[in-house]
Image (cartoon, rainbow, N blue to C red; front, side, top):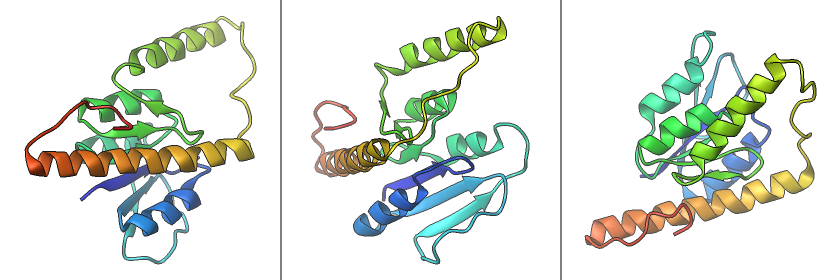
Length: 165
């Protein structure tokens, strides 16, 4: 069974994850450093980790498996999840793949370097309505691809390992 893991403390699309998970009947782990309100559904579980830096990331990386879906804007967490065969997307609908994660990590490191040098003072672009729409579409695409991969594995024949196929 596919599970969805949400790095929840600053995630603006939790409600969208809940809605899609209910449609597919998927278990959702909402991982946070503090108490959050989530819908009272058997499929949804709040996991509260300690307040140490990266505790939620560590919990998700430890529990995620192949074909599970993780939602986080944290690029190093994305890399860790991809190593385990999970599917990864950020709250704006960006799908991370084995092919794209290296460039994402390099860009992240380069921007951190520029910030440390005082060259960049702005943050990410604000979350917009179209980001929410893109996220919903990509989450559905990623879940469909994971379901297809699971059927393929059960039948003993598999093709490409694309996040969409």
